[in-house]
Length: 168
Image 1 (cartoon, rainbow, N blue to C red):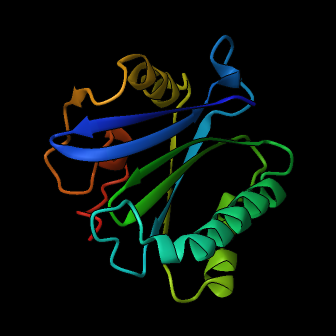
Image 2: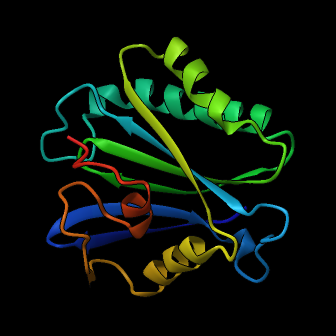
Image 3: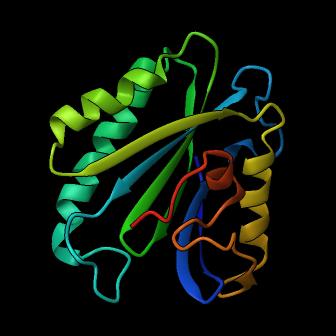
């Protein structure tokens, strides 16, 4: 897989995104029609960074466990395609297919990392519209001003679909 990254500016707020572009030419819309969102909220004040550098090892461990659990509960039908970083929050997006048990990921992740605020939700994204939007963000180039959603900490349409609060 080839991860493409960009630094973006959404309503004056710095944002970092990483998108796996291996599905750009032909997303597996029939096989993976569902999209899971996982939020990992930092437990240390990030200061002027996306996360506190001292917290990096713990956040990386949460990420590794999240990916491993998605793989296990995805039953071979899960694809981690995007991470969105904002101040104090890492968001992970995973497409998955029928038979996947993504709802089992969060409880296991919480038991392994009980000091973190962790959240999960899911939607149907039958045409991979969100993925196509994220690829579009990459083509805008670094530091482009993108429209926000009007809610602090909520930076994508999918978060509105999930009816998430401010993320604070």
